[in-house]
Amino acid sequence: MRSTERDSPKFHTKYRIKSSEEYRERRRLRQERFRAKQAQREKDLKTEVKKLRQDVPLLEMRRLRMSFENGLTLGSVVTEYFQIFRRGIWPSNAATSCFIKAMSQQQLVFLQTAISRHVIVGKFQGVDALIEQWRRYCTYFDNVEFRLGELEFSSPNIVWTRSTMSVSITEKTLEKVFPHLLEAEQLRLRSKLLSQRLVLPCRVCFEWNEVSKRVVRLDTMVDFITPLLDVLGNLDSVALALKKFLIISDCFH
Image 1: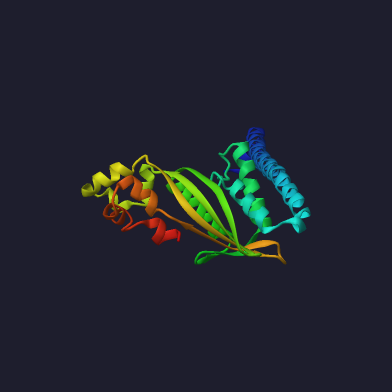
Image 2: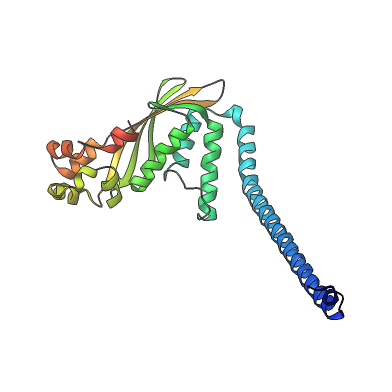
């Protein structure tokens, strides 16, 4: 470009217009970035406030429960366990209703304050193992109902319960618990089991630590044979149904 063109008024006018447009574009981009950061901060703050509001009732329940901790007894904890887990374990996620979230929080508080963090659950250990046990029952079966019967103290710190767990067999039960019955030749057994309501006799053992006021062992033994015999009619069919029974081999005892 010749110097005469650069020195012309027309050139300077175009240059100023171009510079002004670039400046406005840079300013617009900065403002957009600022607004995006502000929006993200507001979103993060709302999320944190929501979480704190959800945590407050949980912490309050835990505080109240711990204030009565010295008065806890093995018998009262066992009774409460059956009350709180009567319908199995309640899910805790964003899609659940306020009632279900409240029930889930109640169960969490109970586990934190009445069950040892290192509780022995069959051949497993820890509260997570107990939660997983319940999660599988409630996932694999429908309409779980856990009822307490009699308490039998074998010592001051060990109690056995006679109880029942009622469950309904669904397509998912057959898929996850009785997968071998999905084979074509097992149609007869599969048809007999589907939609059945089983009342399973249970024996649950609780071992108590008087110092920590916590349950340190929780063993659950479930009798599937007796109710399956009532449904299937003979021991051969029961044996076949339990041949690859995943509740026994995979997660429970």
